[in-house]
Every structure is written in C-alpha cells, then in structure tokens.
Image (tube, rainbow, N blue to C red; front, side):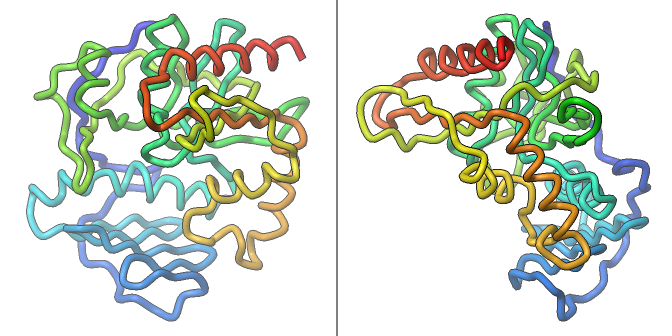
Length: 286
C-alpha cells in the first residue's frame, strides 16, 4: 500500500468532542498525579505541556495556549493525549502502538519506547509492501472470536530521515516540541477494523551482536500491555480496574506477544524487519 505524507491541519475535535480554546481548571487532589505535569481521575485529566495546558473530561476538551505558535506546537496533545484519555474514560482500552498490515490482512502492533525504532521499522515494512493503519494509538476491542484493532486517524510523527525515505517534503512537517520529529498528515492509511495477529515489542536491549526475537508468556505480557495502555494510572483506579484487567488478560491470552531486541551498537534494521515478518507469518499460520 502506498501512503502519502502532507501538512497536518490543526485538530478541531477529538473523537467527536469539539476542542474549546480557553483556560483550563487548576490542579486538584487527583487520584493519580505526577506534578507539575499531569493530574488524573477516572473521568478527567489535566496535562501541562511545554507551552500549553490541556484538560480532558468525558464530554470536554479544553486547550489553553498563549499564542498561535504555541497552539500549533502543542496540537499533538489533542490527537495523542486527549484521544487516549477519552478512549479510556469510555472503557475503550488501547495500546500505545503503531499498527501495520502484512499481506494476510491481519494487524500487527509494533510497541516500544520512543527510541526503540518503531518508526524506522514501520517505514521499512511499508517499503516492502505492508499496509499502514495508524500511529501511536490502537484501540483494541475484545469481542467475537479475536481481539480487533480499530485504527484511530491522526498525524504521524517522523524523524527527517524516515520522512524523506517515505517521500515527504520536510517543509510539510510541523516541528514537535522537545523532539527531533515532525508531524504529518497521512493519506492512504488503512483504517479498516481487523483482527490483531500479534504484538511485537521493540527495544535496543540485545545482550550480544545479533538481533534477538523470542515469545513472551501471557503472564509476562501483562506488564508490557499495562505500561503501554495506561500512561496516567487511570486504568488502575477502582472505576476502571476490573474492566481493564479483564481486557488486558484476554488480550495477552489471545494474541501472541513477541520481544525483538536489537544490538545498540550497529545498524540492524533489515534483521529487525525480517524478524517482524517471520513473527507475522507464524501468527498467520497459527
């Protein structure tokens, strides 16, 4: 599948909730918090970004930015943080993952920290003919016979070398604060709901000189899924805990989770991508 990258418009609504540009509430004694950055309860979140503040409740999204430049720089708060919060408030649990689509049509979730190589790996898979569904947010519904990915449409965040590899004009990208990346709109993303075939966690933690790929047990996978799905501790609050545990347990039991570790001292992109391709093949034949 071919994708095209272009300028990303400013976010005006998040999952059906209109963005209001006005002052946010003051911090409160929240059930989960990391002052001075964020405060969260089961149905609301306050986030203080570098140049803007954002408040999200079940039916409200407020953004307080001092000027148009700050509004543009902090737009990611809306389509990333606010979107994930709203999904969680609605009991629609989700992974911090990029979703790609191999030839068999099932979804593969690529997880990992910001320096793990998710974007580079995704770009190479797309170059090899895989489809691209969504970046960073993947809602997973546990219904029917298999967990189903419901892709969320939003801009992608790419380093300049990866954007160029995918044919983007760097001037089309909106610089992101505190990151060596730009935000682009994506044309050609496949937003079709589809079964989740496997989850792959990337890291630069290989102990030797070779790429390591190995399955993770469902019990071990619970920790990985919880860290990916619950950045602000909302899912551990009493109002969400039982439902989130049921969701994460079903996900880890029904979908294979693999770890792919690359050596940090050398370029191993081709081997990492080959490992992901093999994992997708084994998931497709299971």
